[in-house]
Amino acid sequence: QVQLVESGGGLVQAGGSLRLSCAASGRTFSSYAMGWFRQAPGKESEFVAAITRSGTLFYTESVKGRFTIAADNAKNTVYLQMNSLKPEDTAVYYCTIRWDSGTYYPARQDEYNYWGQGTQVTVSS
Image 1 (cartoon, one colour):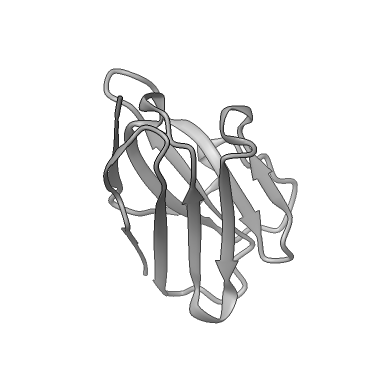
Image 2: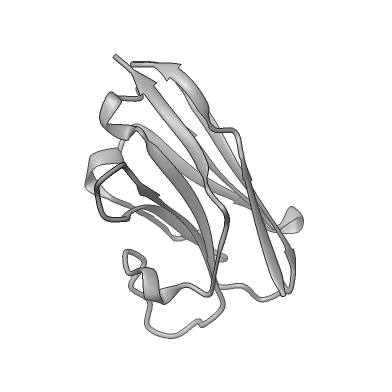
């Protein structure tokens, strides 16, 4: 069993910053990738960013240059540094983890094995 616990969400003004953290416990060895998705009210879940154990990074276009994903493999933790936040970034942010090292489509939800409970990020204008 794996648990993913997100933290770091909150309310921030437009232009501000937040740092999300996701700590994985349980079966975490040899995980292939970790990532972040988000879901805004009334909208479908959206891929945000992902990082493989070897350090390959993936971002959705709308966050490139503003968000940075990083991982501490020793701590089984992934971070999402979010700068220059916009009201359209408001959403619940979910952490996720994948083990399979085969062909990988980071933006597809069905590529991942476990999900966290989510943390709310609200950006006021």
